[in-house]
Length: 541
Image 1 (cartoon, rainbow, N blue to C red):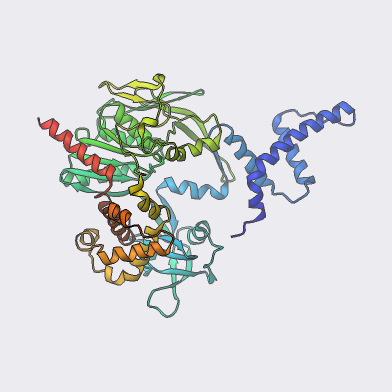
Image 2 (cartoon, helix red, strand yellow; image 1 turned 90 degrees about the vertical axis):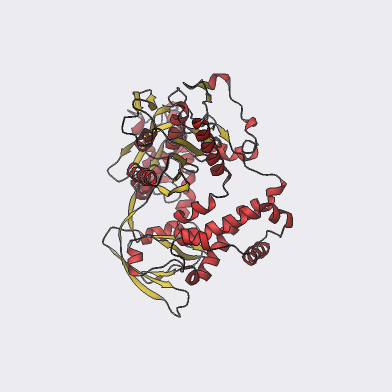
């Protein structure tokens, strides 16, 4: 898709503005020295305004003053730290919706497949389900305009489908088996976005919760999930925070409170202009006695690290997985009348033992953001021995366990990624995105037959990846640049079959169908189950 010329120029606005600022200062000095002119400024903001006016009046090409201003603010904040940010008014709703726990739209999950908007699932009880939209439907037209082709992006689609509650949108869909486009008029409504992806009993006595973010609804969701699991006999819990990039600090403190005793410290924050603020657990926790295992990885950040740090530092449970991201900076939001906002870092947060787990950012934003990816190339994800902690970053929990600061939460049990020769074929399939492609095509092709299963439990019991289906997938992969590898197939057969079955379940039942199947072979989850059982056995002795 060709980009708008203004969008192409946008990344360079901070650089351009910096050059103009420097040029303006030098020009002023030169003119002053030559006696031809001088332009004294009463303050720096006046200088910036004058330069902006000068650019707008004299620059060789047309410039958008608002975009130039936005880019200048972005550039200034980027120079402070990686998490202070400016949110333009045009992006604010999209950014805030992620944490509000709801948005206004038509209630579908979609994916752009071969330049076409394909409905993966409808939100239960949402506007689209009510009018009869189904998984597998292709949206061909929105308000009479064709929306197929490479020029459409996810953002374009969202912009057209989302809108104020009560407004109407007309779409035309192509449905398998239908000879012509089927028209629908959908009345937009408020759509909940859940922070819990899955909650179920993984084994007798052991509950599992997959939490994707810390939003405005997380506390109430967790309360309901814990209550439901405890009624099913849960006495131990696996809390999966892998891939959870964080969210509201208060939601994290509330969640930690469920597991910690009265007055136990959860986290504290302090900054140059912010007094120390301590968050403590209360007596209302509903799960203060049972075993707890927290799963983390390199994408677990911020609020996820607060939970992991609080559990680890209070000797309350076991942290399993790989070193977390390392975001220990707290932002406050300043809203502007035009709908834009600034989120400014005002403090750092510290775990109960005093660890600041913020990783260094003195080498700039690019290096900072690449650091997590570098763990895959420097050997850390395979060998935890490659992580070097200075003695000054060692802390001790009340129970005598050594924990580390200076860059993320280091788990108690490290689960390395396997990257040796036995996993080359499997990793090629994953990196090429072939699992998702084949599973969607299969689900779409067999959707009418797959509807016979009542729910994901019935599907799990009755559906099997047969040798014929496995062969079909292997042939599909071979046609898409991943040649057949007999040794790789044999070594990874269980993982391949589990991934195929769980992704088909996701296409049918969303994440509530995916995790109960995928977790049966997930090494980190299996280690958590093993550790919990060992703890329970030790306690009985």
